[in-house]
Length: 266
Image (cartoon, rainbow, N blue to C red):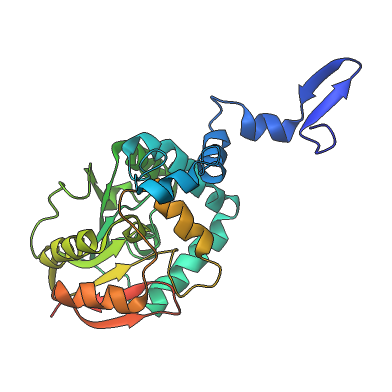
């Protein structure tokens, strides 16, 4: 550990170096130990082969459980190392999707995470109204970030399970889905898209984000991780997303460089 510069040694005494204390002491707001254990110890002492043989999933805690919210909050925290760059990326994303901030734009951000992408739209125009859906503890973190940006007056919260939460009917112009669809089965994704379709006004658009796409090179690791971390999930390709979206009533389904997928409600 000393040779890795995670510990220092003076005589017979060992101590954490500042970087280790910053990230690896439980109780610190910057603690990432749980996230590291969750992400890199997913096979749980070589039991992955047992899961393959028996088909019993998940091997570990269900990735969509609210108990794991603190892990995901930490996972997103790196974005604030260079916040200006983060907002530049999000502004470029919305521009590529042809979603423009304007007075009265109503955005539903589902599984928004602790740093919702929709914040950039609110930063661009004070008339944008955001509705965030996620676990209560995640929304608490997101609201703190919004407070630092001075946009809390533009935000409404819908805490809870994304399946049981009522999104309303014909309310929103844009619905943004965080990186969650790869955690669900094809049937669940179709059901979710139908629910979002009902919540959008005519002409509204859905934006589906997934960092785990079958077409992306090197995604084998994510596929294995999803298998042991969920009861029914997988790596999906554009053709599958297109079929589910069209089944839910969406049209003009577009793929943006193996990134977000956009579709329209007529």
